[in-house]
Length: 389
Image 1: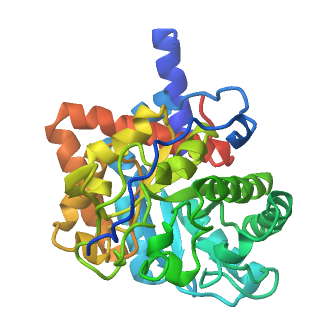
Image 2 (image 1 turned 180 degrees about the horizontal axis):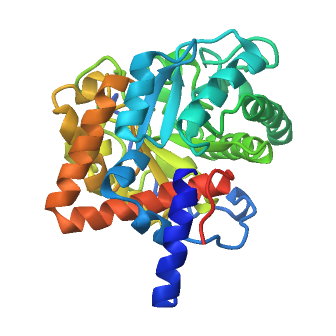
């Protein structure tokens, strides 16, 4: 019997008894962020069950596992990776590395992963296009970079993204950690390492970026694949790459900057998930990396966003290296995040242990943990992985 099969019976019993993840180049201050347009919104179905009862019925260890995304090699599941998923009770994985096995080859791997995770795993990868495309081979098209995608009409990009998403769905991947919604100011085009130099962004015009982000999301959603808009509040105004630099600073972006427009419109359009960066935004919260900042993540929540917030990597990224492994997921969830990524599978158990220990000692954190789990379960429900209500 699957974990949620058992959980379903427990919830039914409760119902009967109660009747119930360097310095930024200076550019001029951006104008205030505009109100999202109606066209930014994807069709929103009636509100599904909130999954609160299902989250509450899980043990603390199971709740902690639902908030961890473990890195696994796309070339084949290792014993260490299997152990990490099982011991941490991880509810999500991210496929790392590069595969040329095609759709059928990746499907074999995802089938093995789902067997390990009771057919309830979120299986994610970075399939942006250009230099960031994990999956290749028969059935996977060569996806152009975001800079090239930006030259397509919105309608053409929706059609393309639908086909790219269908390949992911056929391969058993249900979450694409894309599109990149970072706006690169004109003055940063030559110096911005994480986005502009790699062709990962849609441009310097927030409205254009927003439109292309929506088109990509719409195509993926049509194919049945969820997306995670990244890297909030944006890596366009930085120089360094948080994967390799210990302190990447954005000294430009403010809480009402127009650079945030693509994220705000994605939130208005009920984005499946939003990924938060590990850079420091001195004009929003000068003391904490974004993914450890309740002020930064609070912007999303203040916009009314009650979906999943994912961290950028908390495993091997240089930006979080000084933080003890057991504290990383705890700090992220404490700041308002939900799903913590570690591309290093060996840290998954430490993440889980840290969450359990904190929830056991702190009732307020235990409540926050449960809220985050409900968000993750709602995302899984939208993909047919679990049933709530």
